[in-house]
Amino acid sequence: MKHLLDSHTHTVASGHAYCTLLEMVRAAADQGLELICITDHAPAMEGTTCPDYFANLGVIDREIFGVQVMAGVELDLLDSEGHVDLDHRLLARTDMAIVSLHTKCIPTGDTAEAYTNGLVRAMEDPYINIIGHPDDGRYPLDYPTLVRAAADHGVLLEVNNSSLTPGGFRQNAPVHCAEMLKICKKEGVPVVIGSDAHFFSYVGRHQYAEALLKELDFPEELVLNRDPAAFRAVIQTKRAQARKG
Ligand SMILES: [Zn+2]
Ligand SMILES: [Zn+2]
Image 1 (cartoon, rainbow, N blue to C red):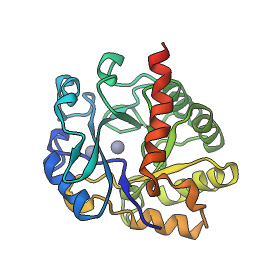
Image 2: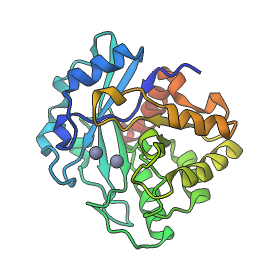
Image 3: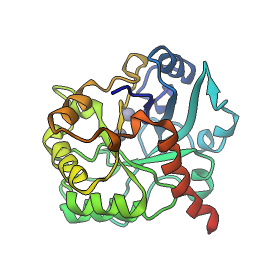
Image 4: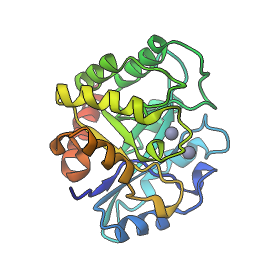
């Protein structure tokens, strides 16, 4: 299966990533991708950029080196009520938004019910498009509930290649990701692979995610990386709810 988009990448603006936006897009072009999402960490992440970075995303060309660029954000889930770290005024300036659980922004040690409820409440927000790396054993999740909510709210669940890399720092990620994918397969719920690249050479590298999908005989038509237009349509449909009010 040819993958044409990477939904999750970071630039120097994130504070702990090492390439510029142009270098990341150049890498996407070199990998033969048609679309890259630039998703720098939102302000609650230690050392990342400021709110004005997101306010000014409009200045970025949306096509560079022949690659479509979506200027987005990786938000932090802050609590079990679904609060995140950018307000609607700033989220409206982004093209797409991922929300993830990070140890610097939400404590570990709570229940699956609490973390799942936080993500489900966040999904109700029309600006939220992807749940990032829902695979970390430090944040247990109720996968049947998470998958159902993703389907109900038009949100994509991420298969994070970085999590699945051997020796990855998220706890037992392959096991949790497989559990989620089996439910997605059974229920026909689409997913998207993100590299979570923090350096140009990881852009479009989805090999561990692809291996897991293959192992599970996961249906190709549910993997949106093969179809940038379908990926955009999912995001546009969700965000149209914000414009309606
Ligand atoms: Zn990061
Ligand atoms: Zn993350």
